Image 1 (cartoon, helix red, strand yellow):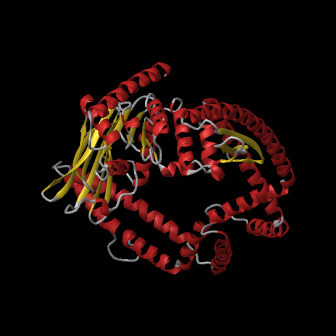
Image 2: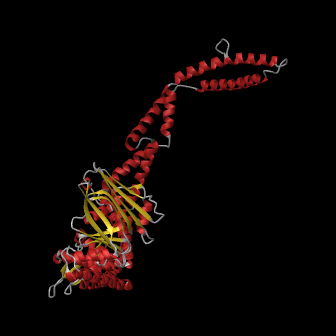
Image 3: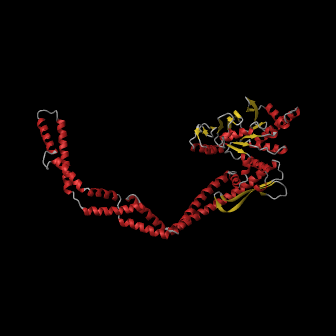
Amino acid sequence: MLKTLTVWNFALLEHVQVEFGPGLNILTGETGAGKSILIDSLGAVLGHRVSADNIRSGCDWLRVEAVFSLDEESLGLHEFLTQQAIDDSENMLIVTRQVTRNGRSTALVNGCHVTLATLKRIGSFLVDIHGQNENLALLKEESQLHLLDTYDPDLSEALAAYECAYRAWVEQKKCYEEKQQASREYAQRLDMLHWQDKEITDAGLREGEDEELEAEIRKLSHAEKIVGFVEESYNLLDGSGGGLSVLAALSQVRKDLGDMSRFDQSLANAQKIVEEAFVSLQEAAYELRDYGENMEFRPERLDKLQQRMDLIYRLCKKYGATVSDVLAHQQKVQQELLEIENYDDDIAALEKKIAALEAELSRKAKRLTELREAAARDLSAAIHAQLLELGMPQARFYIAVTPAGQYGPHGSDEVAMYFSANAGEQEKPLQKVASGGELSRIALAIKTVASSRDSSVPSMVFDEIDTGIGGRTAQMVAERIALVAQYKQVLCITHLPQIACMADEHLYISKGIEDNHAVTQVRPLSEREQISEIARMASGADMTTASIDNAREMVLHAKLKKESFRQQA
C-alpha cells in the first residue's frame, strides 16, 4: 500500500508531501491545479518514462519518493526483490526517482540502484493505474485470455501444468525435426566421418606423443653440442684431461681438514660439508661419464622422428592444436557415427516419446478448457451483473471459449469477449462494438469483479474514470469504485461530487502564486471541509444552504452505502 508520496520540482509541484490512507483516496481541485501531475509523479517511481521537460522551471532536477508498506500476500514481489538482492525484511519499500536537466535518470529501491526495467517490474507489483490505455488493452485477445486465466486459482494452476507439458512436447518435436533434417545430409556426412576416423586411427596416435617426439628431436638435433658439453664437464670434475680437477682439489681439501681435525675440532662442520660435496660431485661425474658413453648421433633415427612429427602436424592442422585435441575430435566423430547408425532407433524412440507427451498434453489441454469454460460462465455473469449496476440495463456480455484447432503456448482455446449494449442487437466481439464510454464501464466492471479475488497488486489508481458521465451513471460508477476500495487501496481523481462523497480520505489540490511562480499544494480535508468541497463541485462557486445540505446528505448516503459494502465483503 502507498503510504506517502513526496515530490520535488515536478512541473507545478515545487515540494509536496502527501499521505495516503487505506480504502478510497479521492483527489479533487480546480482544473489545472495539478491533480494529473500528482499521478504522473507517482508513475515516475513506478518506472514510467520521465523527461527533463517535467522539471519545474528554474530548477536543475526533479525527484519523487514513495514509501510503500508490504504485506505477506506480496509473495511475487518479495521473491523478485530477493532475486535483485534488495532487502525488504522490514516490509517497507522506499522508491526514489531523480531526473536532472541533462536527462540523466537514477532510481533507488531501499537504497539500491536499479535499472528502469527493474523499477517498472517492481512497480507492476505495487500499483495498477487504470486509464484510457488500460481500457484499450482490454480489446486485445491476449488481455482477455489473461483476465480469464487469472480469475480462478485452479485455472492458474492448470495453465502452469499445461505450459510445462507444452514446453516438453515442443522441445521433443524440435529434436525430431532436427534429426529428420540432418538425415538428409547423412549420406555425404557418413563418408567424411568414416574417412576422418580411419585417418586418425591409421596414425596410431598416443596421448602426449607429440611432446615426447619434440623432446627427442630436440636432443638428437643437438647431439654434437651435448657431447661436447658432457666431455668438458666430466674433464673438469675428474681431471682425466690433464691439470688439476675439481674432485682432485676437493680430495686434497678433504685430506687437509681430516689431518687438522686431530688437533682442533673447530672446522668439523666445514669438514662435513666438504665430505658431502665430494660424494655428490663424484656421483655427478659418474652420471656424466655414463651419459657420454651411451650418447650417440643417429641421423636415421632423427629422420624417422621428423617424419612422424610431420604426420602429427598435418593431423593437428586439421583436427586440433595437440594430439589430445585430435583424439578428442576422433571421439566426437565416433559418437556421431554411432548416432547416425542408430538413427532409426532414435527416431522410433522420439516418435514414441512425442506421442506420450502429446497424450499428456491433450489431457491437460482438455482440463484447461473445462476450467476456462466454467470460469467464463462465472466471470460473464459477474461482469454482466456489474454492468447492470453501472446503468446499462440492456447490456449483454459473455466470454466465449472456442477450440483453436491446435496446441499453443497457453492452451488449445481461443477466448473472446462478446458485448451488446442495446436490446435486439446481436452480441459481437468487444473490439467491434464497444464505444469509449462503454469500454470504460466494462473495464470498471471487470476491475470490480477481479478486485475481490486478486490481491497481487495492493493499490489501484483510477485516472479519468469520470470522463463523459454524470447523473445516475456517475452514482453507479462511484459505488463500483467504493466497492473496489473494500479490497484495495484506491486513488481516484474526479470532478464529480457523486464519486468524491465516497472518499475515505479526501485530498484537495489547489494552486497559488508565490514569487511569481505557480505553486501547487495538497492537503487533507476534514469532514466539514469535504462537505463544502462537494457542495462546490455540485453547484459551482456560488454555494447555498441548499447545496451544503445536499452535500451533507450525499456524504451520509455514501457512508451507509460503504457500510453495506463492508458487510458484503
